[in-house]
Every structure is written in structure tokens, then in C-alpha cells.
Image 1: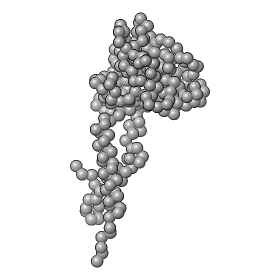
Image 2: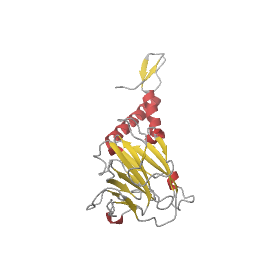
Image 3: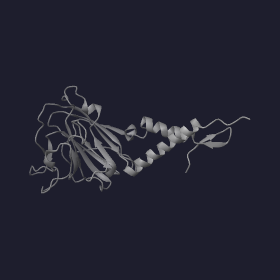
Image 4: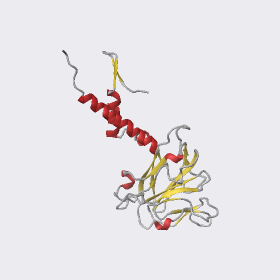
Length: 254
């Protein structure tokens, strides 16, 4: 397939449209999935355990799932749990790294809300979690797309939970559901071993600080490396075509 603009006077095709569109996409980040994200707002106080989790209306099956969830942690030990219907969970990134959650305005703490994010399957079994975003010097959380714990997940119902650091999910025997990874707060952590049963029943521990307030969870579709390289290649081809057209010598009028 060739993408060109149409010149109505000469009835000829030229590569200007492709070049300009590709250049704009690179320079301004067009294609950011959060630009078209569905926005949901917590009503009242979302529940902390299964059976009462708030259901969110999601895109039709087969579409890219991108959404923003706005809510409030009402106390240092508050937890919010949301039901989400995911069509391609292996590609999704979950993040609280944003200006709302990271705001240092009270009642937030100096570095913003020190969050944790947790993903559970439809039976409330642990899938993956993160405390502090890997590779970033922030207190907010990020579960990257295409990680080892979500890569093979099938489409279906899942639950996303948010708490402050120190408040962790546990089973009925008060065993923690996620691995500790030696206390590495930036680790992307999977299920703990040896827990029985391995399903969410309660939340254990408490935050070691007094903070609360508004948060935002961004769920976005992250393309695989092959798709990303293809997009970059098309963009650079467009820039090259634009440069060639601008620098080409004008035809002689002889």
C-alpha cells in the first residue's frame, strides 16, 4: 500500500501528505493511547475485597483497552478495588505516575501519594504488583506492559487495586499474596509461593505515614517492540521524503 496526497490540478500523486503526517506524529506524540482513554470516576468508596468490586463498562471485545480511573484514598489504610474487563491484558501498562497522584499538595505527602498497584484475576488470585515505578525516582507505581507475569494472560475479567505503601493483600490466614523480592520496592513482583489459599480475603499492614487524597490510575495499551520499530521506521521514511521534496531543485522552465 502506498500513502500519497492527490494533486487535483496535475492529477499526479506526491509524497507530501505521508511526510507531513509522519513528522507531526513524531514531533507531537500523536498515537498516545491515553489521548482517547475512557475516563471513570470512583463513586462513594470502592470496596477493598471481592464480591463488591465496582464494575466498569469497557470497550467492545477486540478493541484496545485504554482507560483512566480517578478516585480518592480516604485514609492511610484505605484500598480501592475495581473490576475491569480486559481484551488484551498482556499489552497493558498500569500506572499512577501522573501529576494528580504525584502532587505534593496536602493531604498528599511531600512526594505525592506513595502508592502500590495490584492486578488480580477473576478469582482474586494475585497476578502482578508494583510499589515504586521501576527505573524512576518516584513514589508512584508502574506495572509495565509485556512483563513476565501478564504476557500470557487471556482476555477476561480482572481486578485492579490501589493502596498506599505498606498496605498489602493477604489471604484468609493473613499470608501475603505477593512475593517480597528482598524488599526491592521498584521490583515488578509476582505471586508469593507457598500461600494457601492464594486468593484475596483481606488487607494487612498499615501505611507508615499520614497521607490521603486523590489519585489517578492510567491503563494504556503498549505496542510490542516490533510494532514500535515499524512506526518509527514509517516516521523516519516520512521525514526523509519531506526533506527530499523540500531540497529538490526546481524544474527548468526553458
